[in-house]
Length: 118
Image 1 (cartoon, rainbow, N blue to C red):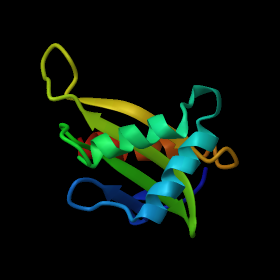
Image 2: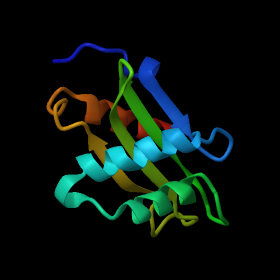
Image 3: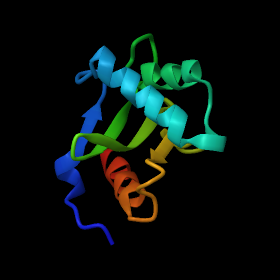
């Protein structure tokens, strides 16, 4: 099992803490590559990220990234639905771990952090 303190390596992006254009481009490219058969077009990934960052009128959400050293190792995109009760308040849009780092608990830890953030 990979030993790491995930919270030390997580960045949370939202309306008040937006990624730079370069960071956003890297997140989109990372998700596009590592979602593999479960992925969408880069334009659609960008729309989900823009929704979470409230780049246009939306309920918002957040994007979490985990870095292993300088490299992006995992990312999750959560969108708020604006509903509760009969529909979850948040929806997991994307989660991906770098294909060479899978099976080490990174995705699970990132998902737990996303749940705690929700």
